[in-house]
Length: 209
Image (cartoon, rainbow, N blue to C red; front, side):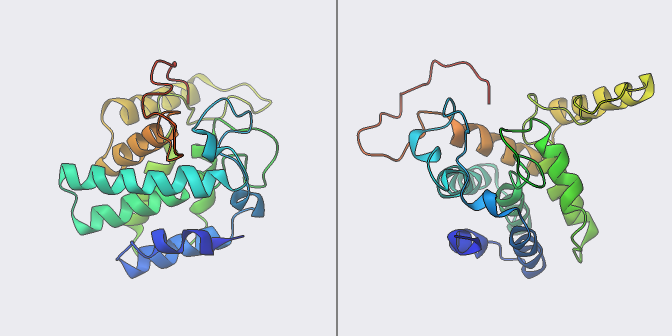
């Protein structure tokens, strides 16, 4: 299993430079990305997202559809559509860390944005837009500075952390919001494509990601 699973979705990115950049990132992810479930505990996401390759075959594929529909509704330009598709395809590449461990790392947006910065893209502005969408895709359930490092944070660091997250929450960019909404809605337990699973299932659960 590998990048061929997402061949159809990648080809939807019309901008060649962004498509090639996205492919390069996906070709370098930890192999466990391609076989991982969406929810290691099975508590979140629809049932088909939680088996072998559920993250890719379930959550990401469904989320791409949500991104497209969201973009159509708000009137995305072709460039915006490409950037949103790219960001969603790579938003969970470090869900369990750059080298995958056990369980979801709730700073994985922050980790992934730093990691994908290592990959050259011809357009720096477009790259930054995609990186920000990845970085904040779990707002308001994430940190932009990891609280899990074994050190004390300075007051300046924490103020910066708060200011940055507030900006992402209060005034998200269009691509950021598209990826955040697609991540949320495609992860709801009611968003299942299995026969016999009601779209109403799970709508009363709490909003934890």
